[in-house]
Length: 85
Image (cartoon, rainbow, N blue to C red; front, side, top):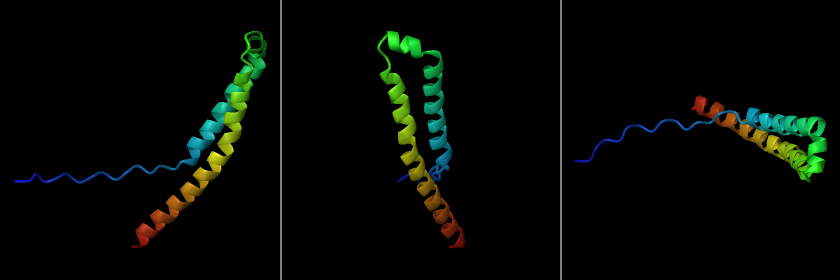
């Protein structure tokens, strides 16, 4: 006698733009903090590449933001068409 499976919950589909914006802000804040307060220490210990890593993370965040904006637009269209059905 097979057991009846409980219904599956709806998958999470949150808006993604806030996550992309938060990532951009995090890379910018960390980079600026290191530039302002730790530049001397970074130079003395040979860790100037950390600043470049923050810059790269910040700049790569823009294509990610554009992708998430497209994702959210498709998400809104999907939900609007599901309501009309």
